[in-house]
Every structure is written in C-alpha cells, then in structure tokens.
Length: 199
Ligand code: SF4
Image 1 (cartoon, protein in one colour):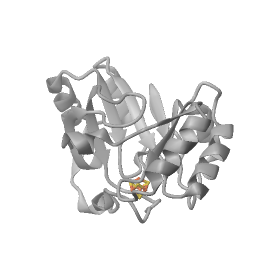
Image 2: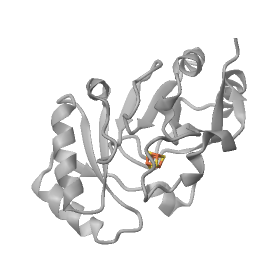
Image 3: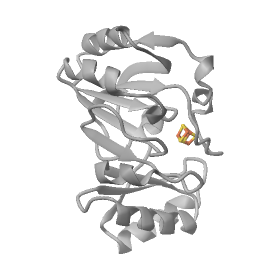
Image 4: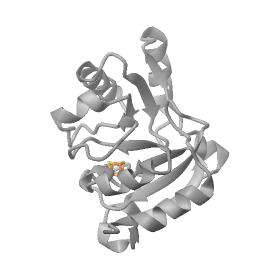
C-alpha cells in the first residue's frame, strides 16, 4: 500500500545545522506538531490538516531524482507519524536517513541519525534518549544551558553535544560562546542556511 503523509514542503538543499552542517541533503518537512514552541520559525507546519497528503512513492521519486545521499526528515514533529513506511522505501534508495525531533513521541522507522532538540515544556519520552546521535539545544537564557546539561546526562556517551543560539535573541550568543569555551564537550551549532540564504 502506498502510504501518504501530510507534508509542508520537501526540497534538496544544504544541511545548515549541527554535525552534518554543509552536507547536501533532501529535506522532507512533515506537517503537524504537538509541541508548539513560541519561538518556532515554522509555525505553518503545526496544523497537519492545512497541508497536502503526499505519497511515499512520490517522495521517493523526488529523492532519487535529486541524487542525494542523505534525507533529513523534519517538521513539525515528524515522530507524531509512523515513519516505518517512508523510511523502509527510502532505504531501498540506499540513502542515509536523518531525523530532527523533539522526542515527544516514540521513535519509529529505520533511522541512521537522530538529532534530539528537546523542549523544556514538553519533555522527550525516556525511551528516545538511547537513540540520540546528536543533542541540539536552542538557548535563549542560562536556564536553557542548565536544561541542556541535564538532557546530555540522559544521552549515550557518544552523543555529539550542541548549543544553538535562538536566531532572534542576540544575548544568547555571548552566553553560549562563554559556556562552550569553559565546557569544550559542547560545540556551537549555527543556522548557517540563514546566512547562506538557502531554505
Ligand atoms: S517542536 Fe519544532 S516544529 Fe514544533 S513548535 Fe517546536 S520548533 Fe516548531
């Protein structure tokens, strides 16, 4: 059966954040989010019903056509959907599958790289932590750094640790720079796609 998902957008671009910064990747932005951060820059993604249902077959055709080696499934909150049908078909194209999630719903599907971006007001499910390859915490204030440290304790020792300034909060940058200099197990993740002006 050809399963469909509500999709806000899908496009071939450059990964702008975190460990895989600078690498070309096909982004699939799923619609629907049960977290609803006030500073979210993709609020249009929240209501799944506002977006078209797109079939796995069509998405896989576009991914294949792009020639990408990596697919990033993002949102919205992609884990509110069962990712098994999509990821099973994508795997037939021999691409790496990455996901960016708040961890608010159970992990599903065949995933090669899990980026957890936890939210203080809707905490990740405890079962998600063991799968995390990269922890990326958006920082506005010192409280977020404390939260980042407590989340890091729950992840595997091999997890890459990133603090990311909130794009519109200038004060977050010196806060993060000072913290990372004193705590070098952390690195800074920047939203470089915004500088490059790619989606
Ligand atoms: S979890 Fe992501 S998509 Fe959902 S509101 Fe927060 S930033 Fe936006």
